[in-house]
View (cartoon, rainbow, N blue to C red):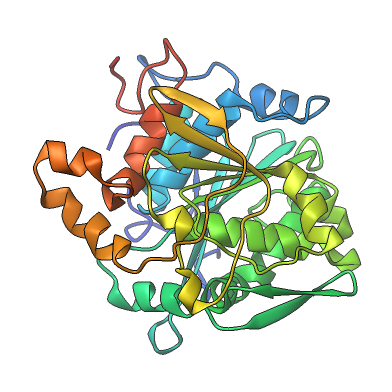
Length: 354
């Protein structure tokens, strides 16, 4: 593997962060600096600190950085660290926190990336694993779970929320430590600055988990130290996650949620209405004709079940018929989001121009 992570194989050597591989499947790596044609950005930490500090609007550079990390969160820790290196995040700490319990449809994986100075931290959730049937069954477990947000009750997708809860506490512990000026490595190791800017992101299921985790921060005074650091939540191809009407806390959080929908991606319209009414929160940006545009009203919940098999089998149809479909699962693929969000003139995460 190219230079991008401090350990080529965590299993072959002691973990670089000491005794960090424990029962919760914790794994850490240090992101190394990249070589030409990388990095894509000269100083992504500065970009992330600049964005949303005074201007609340969506930031195109942030969207691309988080889309790359969300897409490669389907890989292992070394892969995420390599992509962080290519983005220009050399010296950052990369920590994977995961929990898997097949019988309860729990497949919860999150990556934390902390800038070398400590001022920026990205929490990135992995989405649904395409070949994991039990993971898909968890997505179908809509349920009727409710959460308390500042005294108001909000209905949430049961399967998504169960996956958030599976890894919530170890993530919160590390976010609190970062807010106190400690490194992700734990053990009280200090960084130069305490946490200033927290970004939460994810593709597909990962996007739903990002929103639910952010809601937990916003609706709980116990987490205020971390919640005050939240700059924004960026999601890509995120399914419907919460039931209306939205509480005041959820509506307020929506001002910092930026959802991206690529072309005819069907997932943002799922689960279907027959499984229980859900709605989106936050700002929605839709990609069509080569441009991202703010869209209102938000993507509607699917009402016709027949659209689901059409979108699946449409991938195998001739091009003309495929383009005539209202939805297609093909537009949900994370690499399409990354490509559509890459700013003009920037190399791809593979180091070439397209």
